[in-house]
Picture 1 (cartoon, helix red, strand yellow):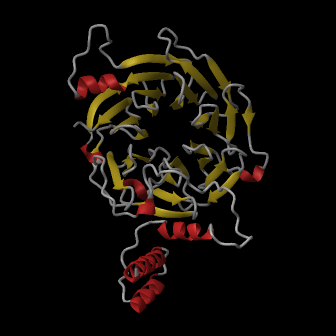
Picture 2: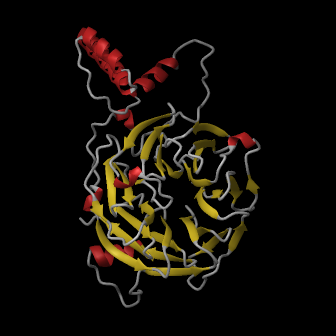
Length: 423
């Protein structure tokens, strides 16, 4: 019993020393460690100590302690990246440098946007030629990876639909999470809804008209709402069924320059936006109020992309200088700064977004200066091997499947490349 208590006490001291060191109080950490006869180990990003404190607070009788549910409390089993368990977890997914090119598609103009559907069986590519192509990923893998024959009844090409209804560049695409509907946004100031289950239909079944070019959007995990970022500081929220538009009633909540990216948490409790003003904002998914701001998240560099982790604990942000950071929502701080990109010494409006692989073991970013794919261990920030992407121009969009080791690169060289980790 006594040995167990001593072991628990040593573990608590270790957490305190590690936390002090990570927060920059290295002298204090050294003093405490020396007093206790312990070593100051390299501090890995972790919220173990905070969780212990929050657990203890639940049993306090102090009436001043709020006991209601918080937007930054997380229940249930952790999925994907969770730094509560430290940084010493060995990745189980294949390293991104081991992916291979399995298919390349050509378009009449630069490829600007892409998306996988929920189960990763389909992908859509939007182009500056105003068209959208939907690809059967299962067919690509069957033919190019497993070497399975394609029956005569099937098309020889994996493109199953080509949609035409925009009159300007298609800037963003996404699949409805429940229905066979593809949603696209364009610089022609419209958002269109296509029913791709009907083979003969190439025009949209419904559209929304905006006042500004559409930059990005994110669909509610339940499929009822669409959060829209246009070339304006105000975030829009549309009810897809009624087409009614909502904005925050508090002007001070909004960005001061155009919103460039938006993402829903899987729980739908929160949204996150990034803007040309350099700020990253968190929004309550119910009230529509801004609840937190990471001001000057990338040292006042405009934001390129924002993405939640699956458990909603962290946000991955990309700046227009190709810098990538991981933010912890409960503490409002940057936990990991992924460094070593060759293009990170300059601001580039055409840099691609960073994203996670399918199980969030790795962070991945296309570097337009070198033409390589950069990747890091998501927990430690350790840089991994490069993967040459082979594009002749900048990669404008980069999307990884949520279900399998596969990603797509969309480039200004008018090509979209499909990558897969062969077994």
